[in-house]
Length: 117
Image (cartoon, rainbow, N blue to C red; front, side):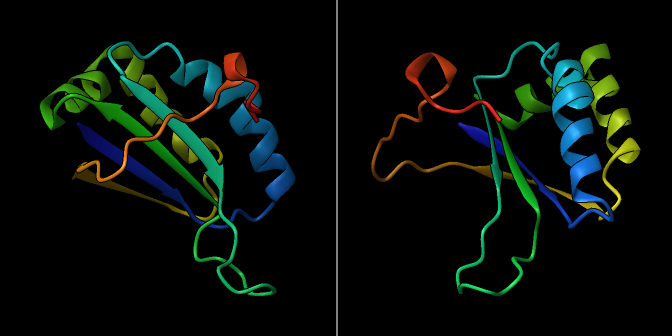
């Protein structure tokens, strides 16, 4: 399994970032076909009171890097990537890695009672 990690820096206006990300970007990105998983989480500091290095971390998963690159190269993927500068005022970093699962886990989603936002 390959993961594309998207690290969003701290935006100039966090409320505007959150609103745009959830109301505009997620609906655009949901049109991408071929993902095997998608996670989103707001970063929290390891030490209370400190500012974490990133504001939001996103994980997109596919069987291989080639599969992820194909998702991003599709019209839907290109639209999602093209939308990023519209809200990522704190910058963004993209990283690929091959996941090695040491202890399997199952993350809850809306269907499992987890929070989608």
